[in-house]
Length: 234
Image 1 (cartoon, helix red, strand yellow):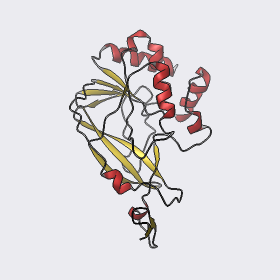
Image 2: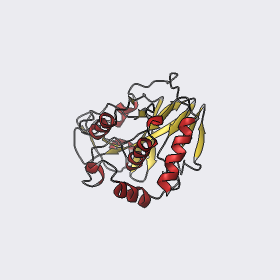
Image 3: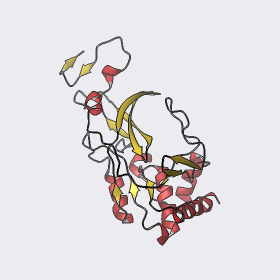
């Protein structure tokens, strides 16, 4: 079974690693990986979860599920500020990208802005100016990631090509790289793995991959748009 192979890959990688960590986003793949990490047993007790997130705009319910997971699994939560922030084209218009310096190699984390027409949304230009930080203290030599070969983005393409990839001084382990999205969900339901029901079943837009933010003035347009910063149309 694929989940047995993935569990064993995680176990062997941890045994040969001095400082492993799991990249956790709160998504479905992360849920499977955390379950597999628990299956490894005591060897994986020392593995912290790294969850990259911004604390602006105010997260409200966006981090609720993630924080519940950290408490339930008694694992350490680590967060780092990005080294760079920028915007890239996406299928929906624009995506926000936080780039983190992991052992000397950049890792982009994509966040989608949501705009449902409110006049009081935070501005993406203000987001670009949020604090940034180099991470010279990033010391992990193994990063377990839920990336799959099927993953793709208009700007970044398909970044995950091999089960193990080099990230500077660290290895990126991708135990689910050959899984389809159907296999991820089949494993979740068959093994009774906990996942973010509000995000996936109730379709509530309150998770860390999406933030309410205005990017209207940054998109190609022929008509004026409302700007919360000036309090009028521009």
